Amino acid sequence: NDEVIGTRKPVLPLSLDQKIAVIGEACGLKVDVKADTKEWTAASYYGIGGTSRVLSNEDMSILEGMHMFSRNLIQSPTDLSGFARKSMQGADVAVVCGGATATESVDRESLRLDQHDLITEVVRLGQELKVPVVVVALAPGAVVMPWSSLATGVLLMFPSGQVTGTAAADLLFGAAMPSGKLPLTIPMKEADALRPCMQRDCPYQEKLFSGWLLYTGRDVLYPFGYGLSYTTFEYKSGKALGDASSSVQRVPVTVKNVGQKPGREVVQLYIRYPTTAATEEEPSTQLRSFHRTRELQPGEAEDVVLELSLRDMSIWDTTKSDWTVVPGIFSVGVGSSSREMRLCGTFMVQIHKKNHDVLLEECPRLDTLLAARAA
Image (cartoon, rainbow, N blue to C red; front, side, top):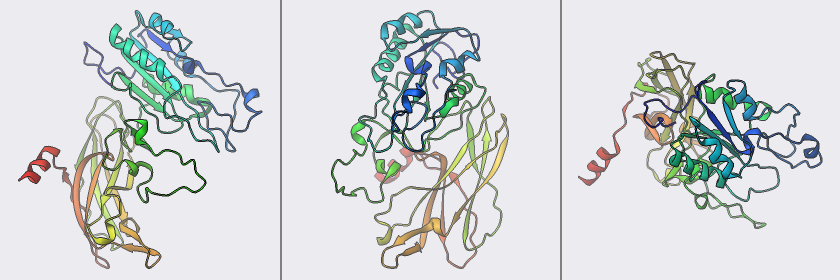
């Protein structure tokens, strides 16, 4: 959500007095329900295909949702870039839509959006015409976004059903404040993702590094847990609450809205196991807890207590076929995504003894860590 050129104002949320170019067929998509009922795997940008599919005759498109806020819309209803240029000339901002589908029993052929070429051209035109471009992506999972560095803003929505248009418009115009976080990773390129296995017998080579952990140690475009808001949040170590039981480790955090708009934050707690022979095959960073704050007004704070159970501090012992608590010193990181830790701390697991609250402090900066390693 970059600032508009020549101003100090972010492009989102959109203003009611702006002239907005709405580009692409996906913005005005209407699902042919009658045709889709003939094929159980048929999918749309609003829903996944297969046995759990839900069809509706009342789907609201993004364009229809935006019309509920503004009539100052310039529609380019095709995916032809020539029409996009015409609609963007004289516009204050452009919204371009793209999507992809997924269904049961069939692997996706690509991680690109169906409108990849259109979006690439529109963000290029945005640079040429000095028009901010917001991309709305309706994706069934991870997608590649090589065009994102030229986009002024990106709204990634997963299949949202018949109210897709209402939800998208509420977020674009600020009637609702975005607070979602990525449940997956957006890779730098498609080759970074794990390809579908085309064989009958598939080797499980990733072991514990599945899902977002597959990208451990690699650069990504947007990490697991990432997501922006229309405001900003400050993290500080919370007040100690006294001794806890031997089965719970508490991590107190205070989150404050230091921006200009109300919003919610999803505070995430990650741990790193002690380095032992038993943990050498464990992923280095693992999500163990999270908390979504109430809506905080500017200047308002919330005290959050994240808890770790003994199960959270355990690994699977193949010799015992059971979970076993790892003894030693754990590292913890609290932040806004899996790769943006705001506060760090350590604690020692002591079985059958009362635990003390984890005291957090600002995480060391990367340049400080590199200097320490060099020394």
